Every structure is written in C-alpha cells, then in structure tokens.
Length: 508
Figure 1 (tube, helix red, strand yellow):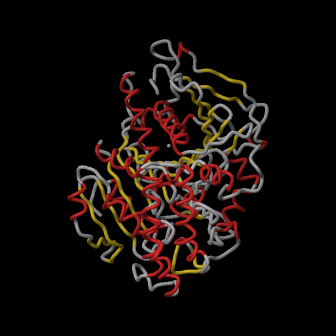
Figure 2: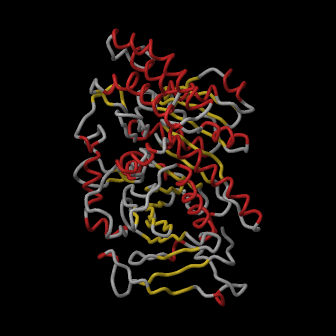
Figure 3: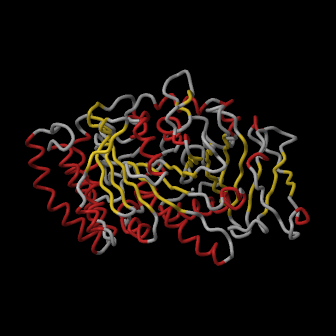
C-alpha cells in the first residue's frame, strides 16, 4: 500500500557462527504473555553445552514455546537481538512464530510461517509492504498470507497463500509501523537506515536456525517496497562478505520480487499522464482540457527533475521539482475520487481504510486483546491498530528518501547474479505498469540490450491469459491482467502460480 502527500511529494506505497552464537531464554514463569510482561530471568545455553565449550545456537524452531519468548543474540551484532515465540493462530495446518527484532531501544515486529509443503527444504521469502509506514499485516491478512481477514468473522485459511511452497516472513518496518515500537521515540527516516536492521535480523535468524543455512532466500515487497527491497537485498548481499571472511555461511540471496513498486519515481510522472489520458489500460478518465494541460507540463517536469534530482541532487530544488510535478500531473487523478490502487473502481471507505473498506476488519482483528496476547504484542503498543503510520511517512518525506537513486541497486544485484522479478497489476495507477516498464527498459546492466529488444509475450494460467511478460538473463518483467496495486488480493491464483514458477526457476 502507498500513502500520498498531495501538499508536496507523492510518496508511492529480512553473523554468525554456530560455535559462538549466544541464546538467551527469557523465562516467563512469574507472569505469562497474556499480560504482555515477561519476567526477564535469563537462562543461558552455556559454553559447556557446545562441542567447543562455547555458546551454541538454538538450532530448532521446535524448541520455541507459546507462553514465553526465546531471545537470540550474536556477538557480531552487539546492538541486536531477536525475541521469538511459537504462536498458534491464523492457520492451524502450519507452524507460526512471532516476535521482535530488538535494536537497543527500537523494536520491529515480525511474523514467520512455515511452508505448507516441506518446511525443512523449501525456500524462504521475506515480505514487506510499503507506505512508507504501512504494516506488512496488509500483505499477510489482505493479500498473500496463510489466512485472510476480509470480514467481521475474522481469519479464514487462504488456499492461495505464498507459503504454499515456501517459508515466509512478514515484517512491520521501520520503527513505528504496525506492532513495532520505540522506547523513547526513536525513529528511522531513510531506507538505508532500515536496511541495516533487516540485514542484521536475517543473519541472526539464519545463524541460530542453522537448518536454513544455504536455503534459497528471496526478498519481496510491494509499492514503496520498490525502494525498500533493492536496498535491503543489497545490504544482505554486502553483509555476506563479512560472513565469508569470518568463515561463516553467507545468506543464499537468490532473488528479489517487487510488486507494483515505486523503484524509479521519475518514470511515474509520464506514466501518470498515459494512465489517465490514454487507453493504456482503460479508457481515459480525465477530461480533454486537463489532459492537454498535463501534457504541456510534462517536458518541464522531466527537465527540472533530471537537473535537480538525477544529474546533481539538490535538496531544495529536487523537492520543489517533485512538488510541482505532483501537483500538475498526479493531483488531477486524485480529485476524480477513483481508487489510486485500481483505476476501475472508486475509492471506498473512510480515510483509514486506504480505499478498501475490508481493511477495517484487519484493524479490528489486530485490536483484539486475546490475539495480541497470543502473538506477544508488547503492552506499550497503542491499543488502536493503525495500518499505516503518517509520522513514519512524514519522516521519509522530509529526507526525500524516494527521490534518491534506486534502480542502480537493481542493476548491481543483477550483475552479481541475483534474479529480479518486477510484476505489476495493470489497473494500478499509483505505481503503474507503464512507469515500471519504462524504468526496466532503461535500466543499465550487461543484459540491457537483450532485455529491451525482447517483445512482450502472453503468459497464462490454466490456459487463460494472465498478463504479459519479457525476460532476459536474470531479469523478468510481468503484468497481471485485471489486477490493481495489490496483485495477490485481486488475482490470488495467478500470483501464486507466478511465484511458484519463479521459485522453481521456470519462465512465466
């Protein structure tokens, strides 16, 4: 999901050795998690328990308990620890775990679901939603998780979940999002800062549960995830160098998957005109006079953005260019009342519903005290769950995070053998397929010529057209027909087929 700020920017919406890892068990015998206060009497897996007389990792998820957290630490990350517990909720057919990534006074909440197929062998997926500032509970309960919450009756098993053939994380990040919290008001305002926390968490998790070592790892996200995921994956990749130097097992970063992402902010300005004033997806939705004005503004918008943001970044001028382009090219569509995430329908519900009234049921579900107790939500988290945090969104807006370079991270990952999938629902406006196709065609990498010269072709599911795709080397672009911004919500079968083929290394 993507948040919008029409007064200025339009901000489009997971070291290390098994012989030295330290595990701390937080005993909650005095008070249970039902009160969300854990008695922090620590019991250590002492040196003598390990083969070398050193601290030993936890090794198995089966050792985790439902009524208390287990805390994992690693000396390579002295500022980080991970609290994790078993949490029986959502889908009784698979094991589920929840917890916090603790970075001193900052705490990121996460969910982890084992694969429905073969958790001991299947790949691992990391998922984040966008915003910036939106909770990954939207991805979990609205789109691709093992259960969905789409009405007042609560969670129901979702047969087309992405954990059908993969183990999967959903992380509420950065600080302040969803069930994540800070002790003293700490915050994060750039993707670079957030990437450090995610890379450390991934390393600590894989080191402590060594049966995941070497497993194919895929980092995925949606919307502002188009900015998050390339930087998160790059941080994980770069961190591997230190792990190898220490004689440790690097993370097997296999691919990134970005759905309706805002990877290149500038490609979207022209795309907004094409989506609203041409028949690129549906018939034009704006009047002729407005479209003519938008068309006349495009060249100035592109020139100002290129000079002030790309050729030589200047905070004041780049911000002014973005504000000008937003007001001239993006605002007209927002005034129509149509859904920015699906141009075929109106925006429904109230301001907190993100144009989808169903999201209110997710908030109600996550406000339930018994559910919060079961999954270990800290008592300091506000009782009224918010799908998106406007303060986090503002913090990223003030740093102009989205106006900084992102596509170069994608090309760097491709050059290092990491596969990249860019998929886009063709009815989305805010992070649309035109803008995403434009930047993928213009991306500079060694396979650019082959990729750009490859025509789009249809891909199918059960013999029916699912969308269009092009691929060269390790880079794939795909559209999903009749889907909006949240592809797995609109097209659960097609999105699952897409992911299964991708994980298997097959062409769409």
